[in-house]
View 1 (cartoon, rainbow, N blue to C red):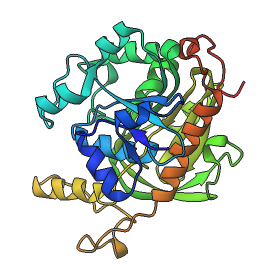
View 2 (view 1 turned 180 degrees about the horizontal axis):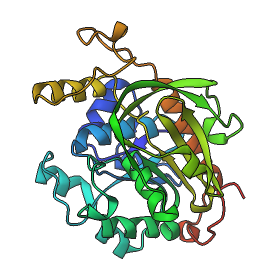
View 3 (view 1 turned 30 degrees about the vertical axis):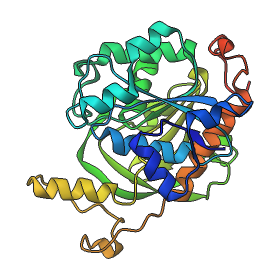
Length: 314
């Protein structure tokens, strides 16, 4: 089944060209099934690029997905037109006031990791989002800063600044082959990393109920399951396009920012050569497995979402 998104959302045409199944709202209405309602709280400056990356992954499963785009209520993005935001995004305050519930929510990263959590201008509302997920979302997926912020909110774990940016493609070890979220995963896999901060393994291991599913000896924990809060946290970027790291590198070089060539990304670490995507299959596996778990465990009656705060698989 395809993903249901507005016909005039830029991601529609991009995904259609790529062969991803996309569906207009009138087509979806003719199917007598309940689609999974997935929301994307998009904190990234390049909204359209991020929408497309996540829509590509969640639209590749056999399930019908209805995607809702959410923004922070008062935060005004500078890299996306007001017309786009007005046409396709709902402020969180409106969503919360509607008492609407969702089968899944993805909270993206944000380029604010140098700031203490409490110094982020929308931190108070972000904490409201995290609390709201416990009563209105069946499963939440926090990505990069979004995952770090959730760990801090629910467990008090701090992020730590790195001496140099973790930047490139790093090998990660499958720490939990029996996890349904890693079904089909290799024993190790390559994942793009782009961050100035880290969450430390000993601090995560010290919290009962947190399980590290993917880990790198070079850049630390990657994927953490928090069953009690029905959440996954990933600190790296399986959703990235083939050229996303290249765009970041070229941007920094153009502005004179000191930055290392992203390691293990370009062939022979030569930035004049075209990078190869070596993570695409695992990206589809992870997000497909997440949606599969949601499909198998979410209540058919959406009013019941959030009434049982136990583990998804209990």
